[in-house]
Image: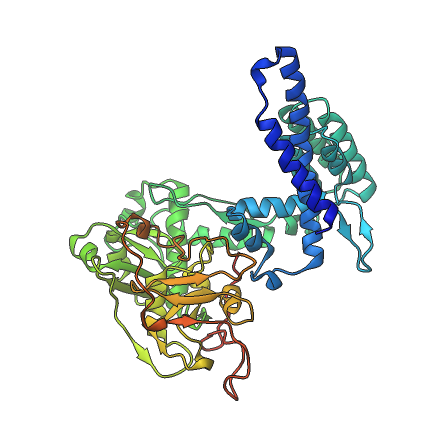
Length: 491
């Protein structure tokens, strides 16, 4: 950082301390309003400097050099942000911060008019959110000149109205533009396509929203025509009809709505795909449902199981699902958390070991990582295979591909296993701010246990960064894949 910037931010701190010590009670209401005006303007302007600094940081270095897999991880770990907030700041910096050409030349922000208005304190964060959203939703047929004019018009309106009025006006402009444009083309449909699963609610249900392109529509039309027909795939039937034609009695006794029939049809179609055995592999395992639960919950028919993707399932549904051949059920002791220990003297984890790791860890064990078990690899948490580590289920842990590779590099993370069998991640110096070393994202129930003295890591069980040249004939970066599986990207 340039000395001028260091001195300026120190002066900013000093000015804030003086401002915080000010006596507002001594001001008249008119004076207080004037101070509030200046404070609001400054608050509106400050984010533009964050955009500049983030753009410069991304131009100067890479996430890997700072010890993280992505820029989202850098922001999230360094300043304890949520994944969503880190993503929001990066997206805002990409739209409103300065850009660089391939030759290093500084370019205007992607949304130059919005950035200029924010830097001048003419619009607030609510305006910026609306402007970025509506400009992003401009139809694909709108040319660059029209997009720039639309942006400037919306900024001009934003300087005189609140975010709600701005949004209403922008929605009207978008509607009028859409009427004037050509029919939607392939590019527009490809841009809008998508299916999103919402978070699981307290009732264990999840919402689904999406836009299907014509191909996906016709595929599901014919599947629903077959499997969501009256009398088909009805869970209320003793022997549901899942092929052929339902009987007249099954049709007459089917009182489900169309939406409910389509829901039940999706279960049957998915189950048939899983049981076909034709789905290949996911990180070295056949594509299958893996559920963890406890012996106590199974015996009492109460409680829940948790899938490899993090979905909570009532035990009565777990028991019913366990009757299907392509599901795996891992059972633990509720009191001690103990699981079956499997040992193997080879580099890659066996399928049975992977199932137990998926059931035990629930997902990537690096703090803050939300990648589920299905997208994670088996990581040698105690000692890397190339450094004499053992492929024992109690010496290994789950880690997504990018986070797994963060351990096997100079200046990267180190991992240990503590006395409770939990994986602890020590951050590299650039990202270490004394943060939590255990990931509770997939096992929040661990936070409910009584406070106790932290156990020591047994046997000095540590997997340190690889320095290279350890064992001839072995790869320097152990990605711990089985059967050629690949990991899913972390946040």
